[in-house]
Every structure is written in structure tokens, then in C-alpha cells.
Length: 94
Image (cartoon, rainbow, N blue to C red; front, side, top):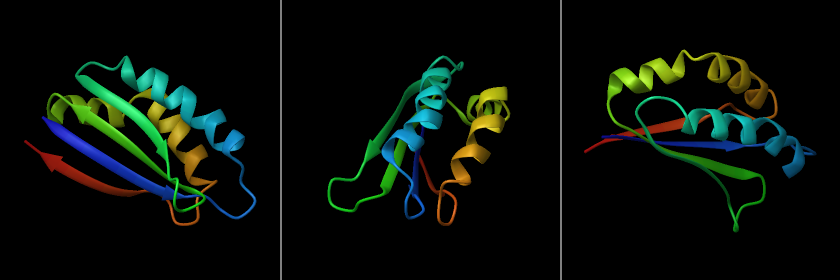
């Protein structure tokens, strides 16, 4: 089992609605990818503009397939354009 926690901070002036316009589709389509065990987006209640994806994957091969999917390669650059410094990713294995 692979766990990914991906953090990002949006640029000043970016709204929750702008973030959700990209992330809702990413979450919905990623949940349908083979090997996905969970894919959620959280917004910090203590730090405005800070978000975190929590993802669980069956194995590294299926995670890699997800990372090369059409929706991932299309939507992540759109999301990164809203972020201050891109995504900070932590990967865990069980």
C-alpha cells in the first residue's frame, strides 16, 4: 500500500472556487483509476490557502499509471499554475 500526501499553497487572490474547479475533476477521475484505494482533498482550517491531497494506492505500478493518465497530466499543471510553489509530496509505504 502506498500513501501520498500532497500539500500546496495557493497564490494570493486565488479562491476556493478556482481550486475546486480543477481539483473536483482530478479527485473524481483519480478515484476511478485502477488501484486507487482513496483520493481526497482537504482545506486547512488553520492556515488559509493551504490544501492537502490524501491518496492511497494498491502499489507503485498503479500509482505510476495514474501519474501518466490523461486527467493527471492535464489537471496537475492547471493546479500548479494556481500555487505559490507547486505541490510538496510525501510518499509513505506500508
